[in-house]
Length: 171
Image (tube, rainbow, N blue to C red; front, side, top):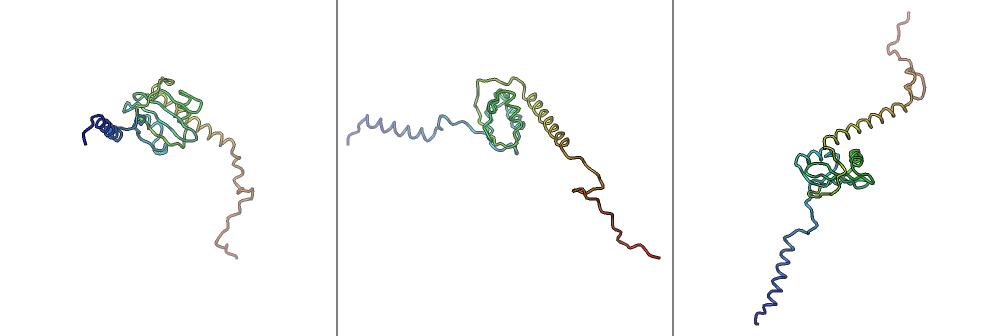
């Protein structure tokens, strides 16, 4: 059978496209970084690690709703939590107790809702959490029932007299 150049070029093009599809990742794929739970690696720890490495990344926190922290060359530049953005959103995110996180490297945003240094954000956020916990503890103490009479057991019954185990000698 004689060789047809057009047929050969078409077959060669198909073979090359198949090979390229097997080698190159899909164009939408982004390098995934660390993922886990904030019980194991806290939000301040994640931010400090990315800051130290001067990383540009998106931290996605998945819980009752998704929340996002954008970092550019190690600096927190934008945060989103529900309808909140910026520092207010960042402070809401710091309050999270139960969420999974994932870090996607190389994701950027044009928004710059946070201008402060990471250390200032973290210190203010942690101070706010300490004050909130203190206020909650004070409120619990204030709403607790009074200690009551130490001679009464729970339920208002008198404390029984101690029983002597050895009988007193009789004369």
